Each structure stands twice: as C-alpha cells, then as structure tokens.
Length: 187
Ligand code: PRP
Image (cartoon, rainbow, N blue to C red; front, side, top):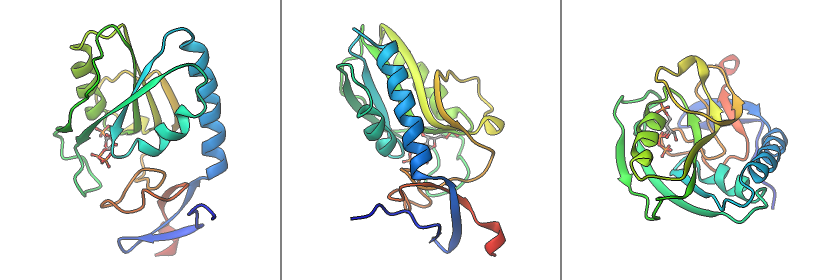
C-alpha cells in the first residue's frame, strides 16, 4: 500500500498543495531522533504527546530514538474545528504517568500563538520533573505571541494554515503523509 500523499488535495471544500514532502519530513525527524538519543543518553525520558495533532510526529520520532524511553499522552484543545485559536485552552485528557523526577519531553505538532505550550509547560512544571524540554514539528514563529519554551524544532514555517501529517482541518486530513498549505493559485 502506498502512503496517502497526493500533490493537491481538497479538504472541506478547499484546495491544498504540498509544502513539506514525506521525504523532507522523515529526513528531519531522523536527525532529531539522533540529537535526542545523544541528549538523553542514560536518562530514560518520557515523551508526552499532545493529542490529537502530535500522534503521527511522535510515532515517527520515537522510532528514531535509540535510548530507552517511555510515552504518554494528554489532550488539549484550543481551536475546535476553526482555523484560528479560540484564545482558551481546554484540558480534554490528563497525563496518567507520574512525572516527578522524570526527564519529560513535551511533543507538539505545531506551536502557533504559543498559548497551548505556555499553558502546558506551566502545568507540567508543577509536577516537579527532573527536566522539561519541548519539541515541536512546526513552529510558526511570526504568529507566536506568548513567551514559550521551545528546545527542538523540526521546521520553522511562515504564518500559513497547514494541514496533514497529524494536522487537521475540521478533523479531516490528519492521514495525509505530507504537510500541505492552501493552494491559492487554484481558486
Ligand atoms: C493545535 C496544536 C497545538 C495548538 C497550537 O491543537 O496541536 O496543540 O493547536 O496552537 P497555539 O500555539 O496557538 O496554542 P488543536 O486545538 O487544533 O487540537 P488538535 O491537536 O486535536 O487538532
């Protein structure tokens, strides 16, 4: 079976075109896996994935990490089905693992305004981890309004709506193997 990676795709009535290819994404994640494996030697980190968006990035990233590690998830929502943040973060699922004295790595698909990650870092710090770092697949630096901790970034991207590879548009499109942006020329 081939991965789902068309050049152009229509999601919820809008056209999107490829911005980052499957190969580009995988190559960068492989590099980050190597860096994390070095940085966390002997530390048995626990990756905390932010559902829903981060599940695909986290699944691929962890398979390039060659030191013993663990995983857990939490779920936040600030966008609902919209393209613009509601400005409020909601806890939809809590972390089950005990993070006290653990080396915690928070994993996001995207840091946009920075609101979700700022909220999350403050929340996890209260659990007294041994260390806390943040990795994001995408960072929309121009859109970030909050002073947020980011230790590892796969790709810095312009201030455009992005879709695919875990990221949705009204819950659709997460299964695309590449990252897409609006295809404005196709209107
Ligand atoms: C997205 C993304 C981050 C957040 C980033 O989540 O996964 O958690 O928005 O935006 P911010 O930096 O402006 O806070 P979303 O609420 O869309 O939920 P989802 O991951 O389930 O799609």
